[in-house]
Length: 587
Image 1 (spheres, rainbow, N blue to C red):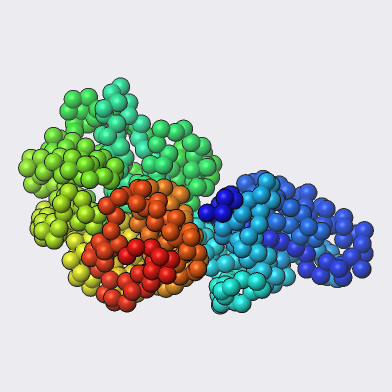
Image 2 (cartoon, one colour):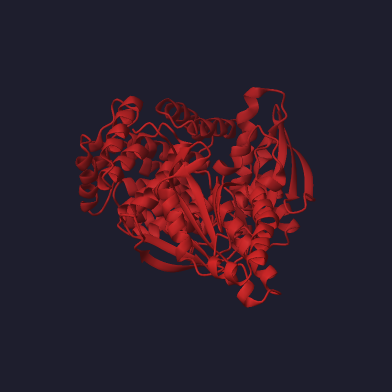
């Protein structure tokens, strides 16, 4: 490495259109207007969206944002505010801006920044229409499912002093509202307009007075999320993103802004023997007001009915209606074996540690759960997933026999409940690793039909499509998964891999670096970055990544990737290996 400080960030460049002409028309008035815009528009709007002004350059400004979404929101707000102010100004005296936004790598030198990331932002600004915003493709991909914004594809553009063409998009300001978060996620285009109430369920507080009961409160929270997500009229944020707020006391309005939702459900759980008490309340994030609150005091065997009651109350509070199919599936749910359910919750909590040892621990608990309650379909599905995870990672001596066991377990889950989305999800992943990609896609689609908010199923479908060579469709599904679960870092890994498949190296690098920031010990993310660096001539960086991989996992083998990943076209591996070979990374 070169010893300088680098980081991935969002860079915004803006300048005034026809500044020299305006100064020639009226120097004093132009200077006054520019100063007013900076003090009354740029500065307060930047503070609201956590932007930092790097430098002022005559009529231009260079800024940095920690969030791509907030950078675009800033740009839209500023351009609209300038347009409103200019409505009463003669056309030949209007101060109008062009804005360019790039997500890229920069070199940091004190308070200043340099590098291609800055250069590209400046080139994008020059490409923008007067009063418009031009962004790089990776910016568009990050925000299009988080903001109600339309983009116009400007294609691949050759820009000065940049080696490769840059894919550019213009923000269509007349058809956007950056203040409105997405609230819809149907099985369709990832840019569908929002049309559903959106909810995030925060981890319920454990009020049992026993830290050992934390898994139980977490399990109840997750089951409520799962139950709500099966309501087709709702948009529900997935567990990984909601649980980022565990052990915090977050501002509800900030949670809503972070996750792109309007409503938050929070509550508490107290377990005592065979009794459980659950308090829950639904809060409107725009006002902070309570929409609904209730307390439930029931026997543990009635826990499913409590979850049903919570869902029904929320549906009523938001003036929604369950479909006939959703009503009938809920009516079919009965009582639960409390001991089996407890084993299930403990085991599921272990899976999230995602280590070889945790998988063994979880398997033992799940086997106890299904022995006590053979009708517990999610437990069979979780067992099938564990076998798939072990196979893909080469853990615990896993081989092809694990996939045969996973298939049998997925079948048992479906035999127990034909309407269990997690069973179809487990079946999809099993079929995928067995290289039955068409069947896997159908199973993932069925899981989505039963649970339209199932981020894991969208991730599975996107991964299957990538392996099948349908990379564009894969990217769309993976972006939908990240809309539902913004903090689910494996989806970032798979998205980066799909972008790599299309040789969109800039996009793939940005995505994989984002994943690495969340999962710093990932050897797989590093190996894909190493191949990208090999293809783009950054051979020293690629070899540096290889050394990091061996430090993290001395048993890492590139050959395992060829053996396990079920790509339909063998040319994918040749392309992957070519990048590593160019950099001198052992293959």
